[in-house]
Image 1 (cartoon, rainbow, N blue to C red):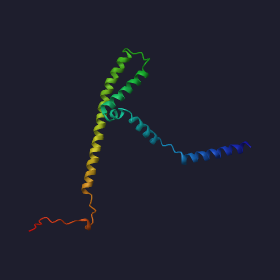
Image 2 (cartoon, one colour; image 1 turned 30 degrees about the vertical axis):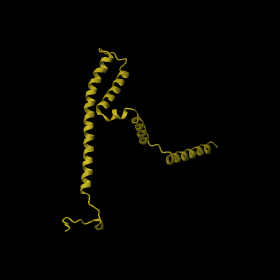
Image 3 (cartoon, rainbow, N blue to C red; image 1 turned 45 degrees about the vertical axis):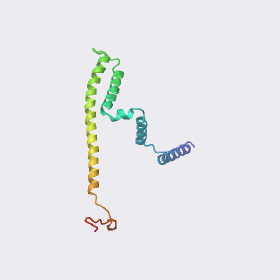
Image 4 (tube, rainbow, N blue to C red; image 1 turned 180 degrees about the vertical axis):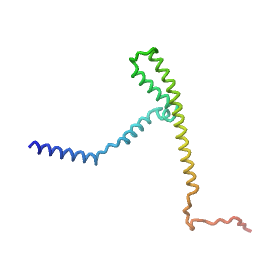
Length: 143
């Protein structure tokens, strides 16, 4: 009796798992993209995310917060605030450098894609039919 009950539960679980896989697929990427879209709709967030210097400042502020949390009980010669400011300054310089490099690479890719699309349009063969060409008289003098 117990074995039949166990088999029945197992078959039901297999059916539910198979049914969930076909009807309720959880797309992790889509949910993350939806969350990021909602965050970017906030006031001022898009402007900060577009500018590499503002983005670097946000990254460094998060880094400084993590340092504050991790090293709050550390026994150091310097006060914690001084250590955070020192690390924040050097991290800001490094992050601005990396973000500027990243921004330059992305702008170069966008520019190259734009040039490639215009070049492709220029050299694309025309598909006009002979009937569509309308002759125009160049030296048509009326007397």
